[in-house]
Image (cartoon, rainbow, N blue to C red; front, side, top):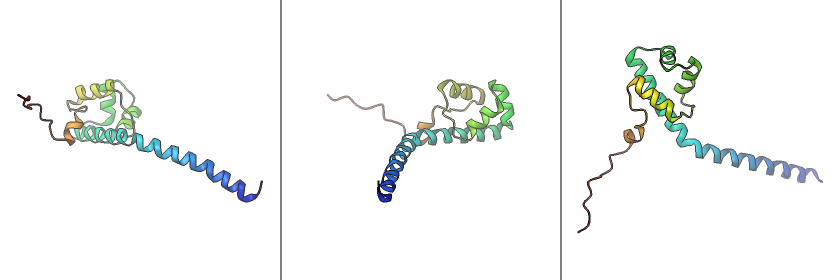
Length: 112
């Protein structure tokens, strides 16, 4: 095998890995964006309450490291965790879709 063929084979392998990484990143973009929105809500609420991340960790019964992951906006939160955050912080964590979209008109008239 020539040097050129070896090079082309190597580049071809890297290209497949790059494409796979890009596809994964694109599919997870919405999840990351939502996690970042939730993290921002949590941080703002902690400021309003005058709480530290450590205090939130104690209230939730988790480690401070877990709260650090959540507020970094890189954690994929379970529904259970989101509900616990809502109850403890009294903020609409799950309603972020409605924060960014106009309400849906549910009073449509039925055709006659």
